[in-house]
Amino acid sequence: MLKSVLIPPPHDQDFSGAILHPTLYLWDSWCCQSGKGVDLYCLALARTREDGSKIHPSERNHYPFHIRHFHSVDGGDHWKDQGCFQVPGQAEDKHDARNIWSGSVLEIAGKGKLYAYTALQQGDDDHPFIQSLAAGFSPEGRAPISGKVLLCPLRDREKIQKAGYYLAEENNIGSKDGEEGGPILAWRDPYLFEDSDGKLMMAWAAKISPGQCAMGLASLSLDGSLSCSVDTLFPPVLMPNDKEFRQLEVPKIYFDPLEEHYILIISTTTRASETQGASEVHMHHHLYTSKSLVDSWQPGGTETSQIGAVDTLFGMSALQADYLKKEIYCMAPYTELAGEKLQLSFPPKFNIDLTQLNKVAQVKANRTY
Image (cartoon, rainbow, N blue to C red; front, side, top):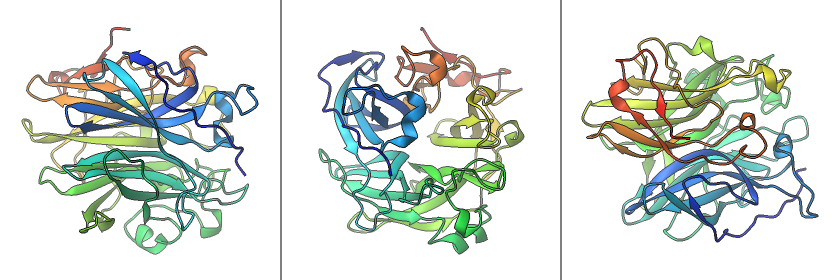
């Protein structure tokens, strides 16, 4: 069982540029346009236990996370803490009984927000990572109560495998030791977006073998009550240079209507197994473009897909895109490699110059810090 931990109320500080939260660790990120402002969501955990003793970042998985919500009215120059958006343990069917991991939020004009998240069932001590992809609807101004499972590796096993995705033996789903020598189950980080025709889509982190990652892709439908369901589960989407990394995480897809192509940003690690030490695992961001969601993804640089100048950052997302100016403005939290003072917090936003795409050896972020 996970240990209980307090969820702090909204902090009254106006965060200027960076979000160095005094009471929370923050990691991963996803963004949503909200009227004239922008919402930033991330995973969060209190820095201290209920008795006041410090929680070390390496202990994160011993505690339930919550999803934190920040809002900016000036494009990310300043942020206000809006408090907790979602907590685990709210679903009647207990699909989120153990924890919630990264997801996404998509504004539904005039109605509210569709949100997706990674739900972890309770499992047991040997199988703590049983992940499902879930989604629900949140009216404006109200936190969600519970979504419903869209794709579960236990319930939907036959459908998922038939589409070409890898799943471990049923009795080993979610094992803390990984899958057949590879990392743990990858069925997480659902990202909601619309394709070039306005169709609702979802991408996520998946696998095609115990040690080979892939991006999952499905089209979705909303009924009259804004309940979400899967229309088509597409085959796994592979990156052209996926031998360079072992885990693909928190995918984000954006459509540039001027260039008529998609832009994909992923975070990756070289973790080959759960026995590796943290010092052996390298973390990067990669950028790709494609005219099609299902294939033909090409590295953003002429020599590499790795994004330069984003060392010690992980879990990038776009705050907003200005395709006329050929710029995407992004946020990404610091990893533990940034040092004790900065780890698991957000530096100021930065931008990526889209004129670099397919014209320079490596696309680099423009950071002023």
